[in-house]
Image (cartoon, rainbow, N blue to C red; front, side):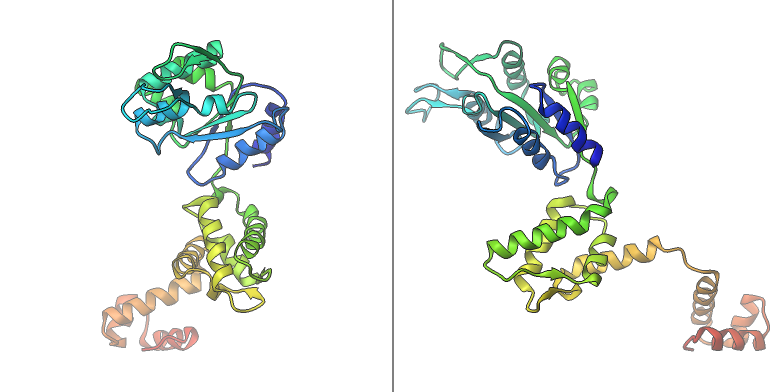
Amino acid sequence: MREAVRLASRVAETDANVLVTGESGAGKDALALFIHRQSRRARQSFVKIDCAALPNELLEAELFGYERGAFTGATQAKPGRLEAAHRGTLVLDEIAHLSTDAQAKLLRVIERREFERLGGRRTVRVDARLVALTNVDLDDAVRRRAFRPDLFFRLNVVRIHVPPLRERHEDVAQLARQFSKAYAVKHGRAARQLSRAALALLESYEWPGNVRELAHVLERAVIVCEDERIEVSDLPEAVRTAAALQSRRARRPTLAELEAEYIAETLAAMRGNKSAAARALGISRKNLYEKIARYGLEV
């Protein structure tokens, strides 16, 4: 993550296009905002459009704008996100969802810094820094001809990968503290500290939903917490259960633990018959009784 931030700091000083990759919820949006705030465009607009959330027709209208009468319902002209991002930064979230036509139009914007609104003839000049975000393997999309290679090369000037939260457990505690403070302010609650046990559990969880999931867990904890500290009991049951299971899987059992588990399973299979269990285990009945006592097995 330090490498990602270091690279983002370097590229922010320039006007180069940036491609940010990573899983959903890993923090791509936050890195795009960091690049904007570190750039010479920081005082200008920071505009984002989610390419996956809109149908193709509406997406082009939102991105490029339209003139009155361009389509049914267009009763007045409307500038698009590109114009809104003039001299600032335009973030294209989930860019792999752009239609072929929209990809061609965006390529022209990158090459010529100009475009026409839908239904319009007037050329609009624009100076916007482009940051594209994707959780899709664009290299593979290009090979499958699902994404234009010329647009890919234009966007892929600098590529920054945001690793998933499960690969940077050392970030969990700091992020959790930041989220707990922010949500305490949002919901009008007193600031809550996290107990050591709660932090340890959060750090042992794999976070399939990445940073976004962590934020939601902390918001819930701030809301339900009734004491001065957020305890394990304030965390969702699903997270507690999954973290405990993951912790057990991550820890290698000792030889004694494996032996105790195997003896218990054998006794259960023999329905408590110790003579039969001893024969199956290849040990004497006396030795079996000693191991049962040593491991405190209930029979």
